[in-house]
Length: 147
Image (cartoon, rainbow, N blue to C red):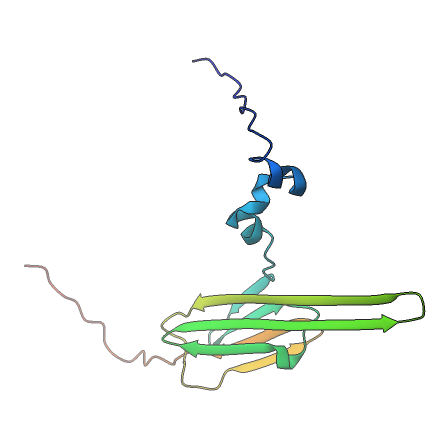
């Protein structure tokens, strides 16, 4: 088998107008926007009684977070924006910043969805504590025979 370098045919100027202006035809696809989406790092820790989820989300305030559980799905999202404007004699400076993220997780069956979930945000870390259901281990094991 021989490898042959593929040479892309040169298109008329009007077909390459946007790629010449923007520098890449990748900017015109959904992949460009999805690859550059920010998703915060997280840690999950399990103990005998609970799950601890830590999400690194610096730059947010407590009021920016929305956390919900519905049908075994934990949804965490946050959004904030900031705008500053400075006007002087010779110039106007306007700066803005926008951050957001969304994460969702399917919860294990042993998470107690009815009990209160503890959520804290301190020094850029969102920490969630989810309690486990206490299963009665005194129920004897049931063996089912195959016929």
